[in-house]
Image (cartoon, rainbow, N blue to C red):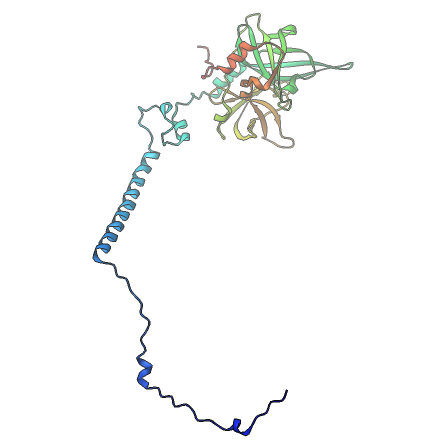
Length: 324
């Protein structure tokens, strides 16, 4: 394809005559923007709404400050925290602290109580042709008529063929007067219940069982047992910690022979059964929660101990009293 350019095409053509006045550059009309203005009535209405909103904020702040005092204010001495309704705004922990606590008693009084309820358990075992003997501790937790329920550790009485139970005054029960009546369904729970038939009319007082959930970390405790054959030994410590909703960790000294013995609170209540110590440590012992005995559905029973279960499920909330 060939494009031909002639001479006429290269000749210049006259420019069109276009005239623009300088004034034309400043007379262009800008786009019209409509501005909507509020009337006086609307402005007054908006002011009223803002004022009401501010009043709500101020009043709410004042009420919040006043109510803060009501939430944390202790009730008057005449009020009874046991009558607190669900709708009461007081913190439940504060209400618990306001309830009248059990009376704390001295270590000497706890010792006197515990010695009467704590027993020594001697276990005669036989494996094949080999006879053996071991020793541990138990504690009376319920009594109905002549029947006394003793709680101890399962490892204390396992493989036992016969048992001898000795009281702090030297009195003894042997033979058919003693029987194993219950073990936990969960065999990893190292507890056992034994029955003593007190047909000779001896006095074996039982210790009231304390609630595991009311145990306070750092509170004082007392442990009883027969470590290394040293009869009715008492040691003192604190609740170091609560573990796995099952154990009470304590620094009260626990040695072989203490197993099955009571761990007692400052109010004279049985809160734990001394069970084991951590190896290669000092001051780290563990007791199983004593109120496990108040859960019949968790136990396999080998005898009818219904009256004793009833005693455990309806305990006297106050510690046993010292003789006058």
